[in-house]
Picture 1 (cartoon, rainbow, N blue to C red):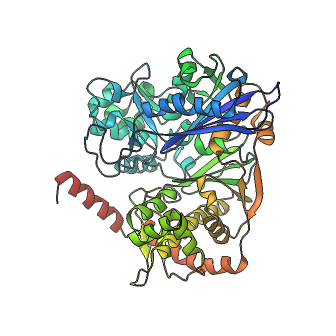
Picture 2: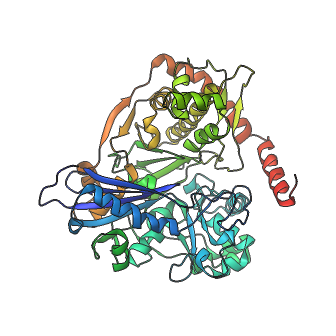
Picture 3: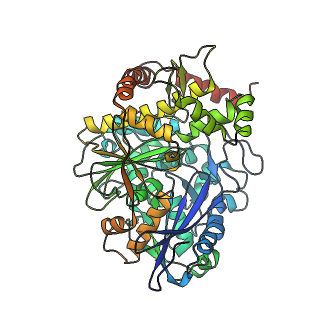
Length: 559
């Protein structure tokens, strides 16, 4: 435990990820992380059935909002106990969430799945960020916006994602009108958890801008929404809260109830909600322009500040002050990264590898990494597409799916594992090249997230990008970033730049590219781009047709 001086003050950051929530207690003066704790969601991700056994269709991903409150009840007190600090010296709490994660609620914030009669209704649950069943609705939004020449469409690279709140809201209306009518607020989870903490529903500008099509002070118009569906005309006026909270501001004060959950003093500052990726920027000292920060975990989110407004094809959005006040905040991303590696390890590794890993005291990821590390670039003869969870950037199409090309009877599991790592690196390179070509130059690449622990993966990324990679010094980047925002909201620092300089940390150029490997990867990357454009940009619709066949089979109950 790090010692504390008698005059020290502390803040708490809580990061809500895909499978768990993490709390960290941070000293305000220098960003020292004194204690942390993680609570895994009891229900995890619901992608096959509801808790009562109600089946779900393809591409669904739901969660139970009570799991989020359990993080406050369990992880926060545990982090405080580990830190050994006096709770009375905690001056604020900040939170972040994976986005876009949507909660349908009643007027007082009660999630609909907790309302009588809705426990067996899938649409009454939280739609997690990787819920992709709203792709047909996203397609219609994009087609109509393009036809009408909506001014906001270029701010999102020309395409709206099925992961975002309008597509998910339209799916709610069209597939379960009664649930839509019962919904009084359509709430981003980042704002819902803040509501639980301070008793006020404060809509944050970050998620509204990136996920809620909120640009230049306005949402899409009623007539646009009515053209999508007559009953969707009132979506903004009836279900969305006006934007009133900006990053680093106070949303309110901790209620007595939330104080009892967390063990924190009632009345301390609760910071405005934020997105897990965007909140990490100050923790990685990446608040200046030109530094692309990749938060690498189950998925990867790429964020970067820029001094100018540009249209970047396939970006997830550009928002004035979306990351740091006074700069244009850009976002892009990959929907599947760590999730792809976990899928492969869970479903495609033979028992002999599992046994070998156990005998050597390794996990299967470590064993495959070790075996793959000895290979030369291109030795496995494979190239893969990293679309197992669709493509977020730059194609913005969640009907796309994964590919591994070049399999033979001599292909080994470590070959495929390495090819999948390389595919995710190629996907990141595609994003970087797109930003550079669009006049938003990437001058430094900074990485954060759980995948930093894999040295092979980080070296492959450096070689594929042919750029040095700097890394955040914290293992809990989003939670630390939330704590930094809480410190600003509590008045401990005048702005996020000052707080970042004092409380954040980064190791510059931690991974450097090898010139020979970088040159070898250029040839493999060229093949990746050939496949990328053939399946993602060309006239070949095989992936979409397979998705349609799958949906029809599920709907018809075909064996």
